[in-house]
Image 1 (cartoon, rainbow, N blue to C red):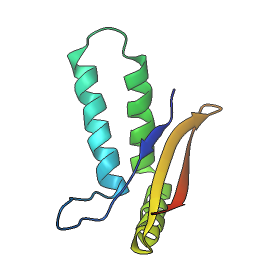
Image 2: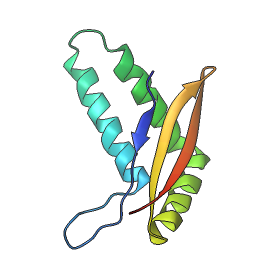
Image 3: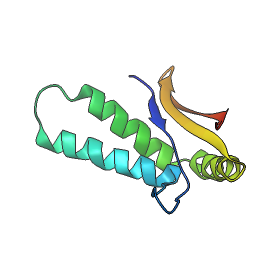
Image 4: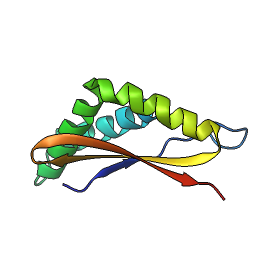
Length: 99
């Protein structure tokens, strides 16, 4: 499964932002809609759905949300990656300087 990448942003006057939790829930709903369509092979969507559901239930998600919001407040870019490694869900945060 390819890693799921979530990029939270603060809201501005011009652009609405979303937190990690909102982005993960939105992606989870997208996966659910694809699974309900039932067209073709759905293994990729099943894996994505499982990874996102696991992330949302984990205590790690709140910690990553707080951490990402702290970096956003500092003007930095944030990306959270969700993936499976050795059959277990893994989460990592990547921080970049905004230009």
